[in-house]
Length: 264
Image (tube, rainbow, N blue to C red; front, side, top):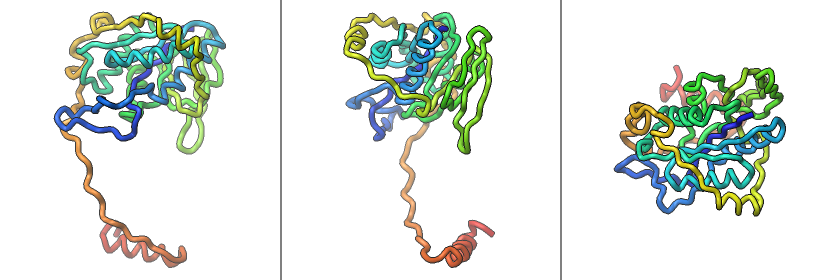
């Protein structure tokens, strides 16, 4: 099987700061890591390869320093990696990013199975994975917590999806794209030998021309969503804590909600 995993380099902090002039993340002075959810996607790709054979290809779109997340992928056992980097990709929203990654997957010959983390911790949109599937015209299986069965010969896969109130078992045809949650596995750690080998690998960089991308669908030009203003909401006033027995508190709560015309 040919397995593709899409990963992203993200800031290693929850204290994200925004440049007020450009409305973009301030990355200077902030360490970067592989998006945590993507580590589970890499692990699931490796486990699928170990069971069915084939290769694991890892793709990341980002600036030149994003090459480090690809070396991490090589260190744990992935076969090939690609850095998708070009000034023309700058300012891409989730729509343009999904288009760029889909074109990259097509340019390297497609895939039998694509894994993505359920979302990136710096954006939390969970839109890129489904967007890639839509542009490739393949099924998407989101929030997957377990791969039950894969039948490469019959081009079939059965997975469990994690829902708010339980789990759902879904069967799909292959090729397909899967976004995974952290419950799916425990990512492996790289070996010292793996780290040393990864450090010596020449990692290819793919540009907009290399993936034959439409210039009107990438970067800022291909992004229909624009950040016009970033601000911190005003702090809310202190609330009131109602104490007492349930039979006493509920009528009092209803009365106060009616006074504020929150309910009628």
